[in-house]
Length: 562
Image 1: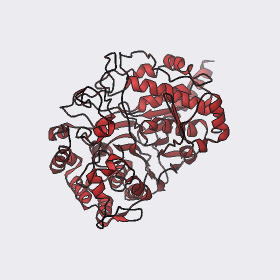
Image 2: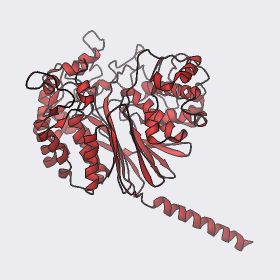
Image 3: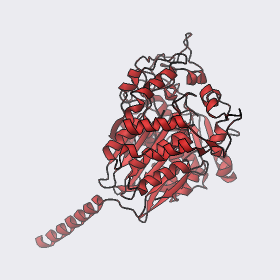
Image 4: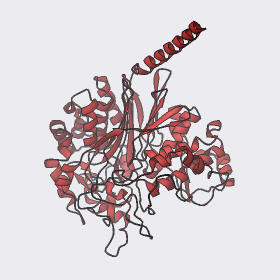
């Protein structure tokens, strides 16, 4: 009997050892894949992979091109969050390149003399909206830890496009003419005005020699060249020309990106990983935790009940996010409480069968007293994903905040207005502090949420989207699509968008279909007339040893293999 049990134990240990060895085996693919919002950017990343670079190397090249060909969304003057998966060790690292408030910032930063919040676009165009750009510094940190090619060799493709010129895409041409204060701002208006006084149109060739010179400086002097030296002084001088500016060269010199462990939680048989706050990651995990307590996985994209469950999970998590989440270096966030099984059980019971009034924030374990939030978030953002042949993965959401950021340009690139992501009102009517109020050195709360999904400890999928606060809803429906409804990545990113925040339901009604819309109406959901949703989801999934990409058909992105 003892020998029999010993044999069983030995066999079990052997299987466990084999499983462990398999889990530690590196991820290897026959080809890599790049998915980005502009074909020129995707091609720049693909070429880096072909030259033997890895996912982090490609990310640097992609961001350099995006800042040129998609300046309304991201660039050298913006911030970002990056999630990295090491195909050899299977470890995940989150990188935070979010801007920080200047040393002179105070909680009343965006209040007028009468104590009322500044009008939003007045704040955007003011000198108070721009923080130290963090995206390139963040990429520099990730590259120092994981890059393979030399930093100086990653900017050539973008520099050539800037010197020789690139063909203006239909989206860039259209968005440069949207009647917004930023597009009418002197710098942006001058950039898109041709020598004959007419506005640039789709198909025109646009050159940007100033951008090329900035890239040359970055290549030669490293990622800190935006925070120290001539470019940093140019940034401060340009911001200082607008009312209320307090940004200094010392603020730029003091800025540093951050690296941390990813925040991961199980979702059914998967593990979903995101960056921690101030990204939108905790709120997305709460949405998933709520949906895990529904039967959405037994339904599908043509089922009104499935969309109802998704919408109500969104409403509950958005209410909690707006009340409790901010920069964890300054705010006691109840993240563990928000994601605890007991709290999710109780919160999920509120989903019910019909939609009620806007849900109030819950009372998760560990929640401090927090005031009602007054944050307004815009959506000038981009997302790209890369998987290289060695299985390394980059998922990066990058932004200048609003379309064309603050409307300011310096040395060929757009400056962000990320500081308007703070709550303009520092306290509510009861005097309770808003979690996302302005404080010196604090990073504003963000909805940017790059995602990586694991199964059995190995990479399964990565995705993300632009879209301001709607990023969370866009990511959620794509995750439900691939994980619960077994769709391809392309099918999942193309699913209809539905965003539910408070009492507002915005959706692509025509794509949902009349039967789904009718079913949702019967459950108490009605949609804002004429409101569509313009996501920019990009993702890659590993299936059967191959990589499968998805590019949102609502934008100009492509998926390329190397």
